[in-house]
Amino acid sequence: PAKVPLATRPLGLWGTAMTARRNVLELIPAIATRQPIVSGKTGLRWHMVMDPESLRRILKEKVEDYPKSTTTKLILNPAIGDSLFVAEGAHWRWQRRAAAPAFAQRHVEALGPVMTAAAEASCRRLEGATGPVDLFEETVAATFEVISDVTFSGQGGFDRDAVHHAIDAYIAQTARISLMDVMGLPGWLPRPGRLFAGLGLKRMKGIADQAIAERAGAAEKDGPPDLLDLLLDAQDPETGRAMNRDELRDNLLTFIVAGHETTALTLAWALYLCAFDPAVQEAAHDEAARALGDRAATAADLGALPLTMRIVNEALRLYPPAAFLSRTAQAPDRLCGREVLPGDTVMLPIYALHRHHLLWDRPDAFDPGRFLTAPDRYAFLPFGAGPRICIGASFALQEAVIILATLLARFRFERIAGRDPQPRMILTLRPQGGVWLKVRRR
Ligand code: HEM
Image 1 (cartoon, rainbow, N blue to C red):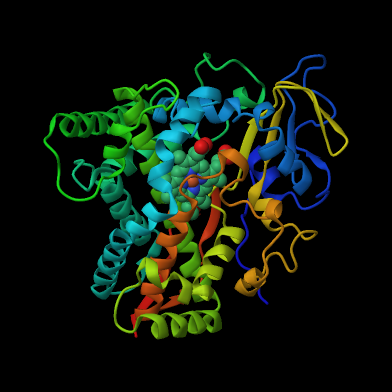
Image 2: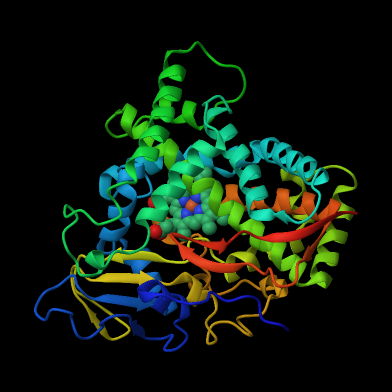
């Protein structure tokens, strides 16, 4: 089978991890594995880990020794504070406990109608489209609708542009790893390019603060509780403490940011892959048309859409939105026989892991059938693993299958010659310039 587009023109550290193809069972030297950049000092070595056993050790068995990397925190703190995504220890545990009920299977299923409505709205927009469509922009619109309904019941005064401009500007200016980070220079030293990113963020936080203040002062609202209600009510079972306003805001922004672009990327890549392989697209169309007839998909249809789910998984394998995870080692350790020192950065290059030829048969081919059997748990990590696994994984999978099946039942997607999307790592793995496809009503 033909190869799908690969990440191209690797640059620096990102690129090394994106294209690492060899030594799967070893740590791959990125800048220096055995030789510290400045000998005798710790915290200056970066390791690439693609051995499933070592990944299990980092993410599950020795999770306390491998907290999120200093660089992750440096990049994300100004945007989302010390929220669930970045916090550690007791502060992480209680935030995870507070948010967990909202992401329990039963609650996620109850959110199905919000996702179905977003799929319907997406179809209406596509019906009106003339000419090629950027499916990434379209799927961002759909998933943003879902997340703003789920977090604020759509009452937050957030519009997609406010959030996107803030995040895009921030990411554009900050997410490229600074040489100063690689050198292990302390976080309080300002990084060039990170100084000007604050304005959009301030605006975004202002909108969230206002939404929280309005809700906290409002009488009971109609309808089922949304995430804001759940977090306002959440109490730490051990201390009885509730979230303060800053914590509430940082977590809501975390859900909005972590929860929609990732799913939109998955959907956009899945649609591209269907256009790339029309036979798979026809089979998925037949499955969706049989299960749904004229209506949009609901959470109850998931069991009847196994091929759609496999396509979503294969999109997550080939184009994992979180193409990298990173940790900072706290204790001396050995991974694959190599020494890891406290302060060393350990990179988990998910994109490269998912395409490794020792772990996957024909790794660069689009083949949803490979998910007929479950892959090795630690060879497929689109949502991470262990205690820090993505809290929104089943939410995202349900949303992706509902929207993808609904679109494939009603439309045919075709590639445009010369406009295949190019994956680029910019904090998430994004299609540079969008995912442009021809869309035809069936
Ligand atoms: C954590 C990926 C959707 C909220 C993570 C992690 C990954 C990930 C890889 C672990 C990061 C690490 O270990 O360093 C994805 C992908 C998604 C998705 C690929 C879509 C396809 C969502 C959604 C939400 C969400 C829908 C919420 C509505 C979070 C949060 C965490 C997280 C809060 C931090 C959890 C913790 O540390 O306890 N995600 N995510 N994600 N994700 Fe997702």
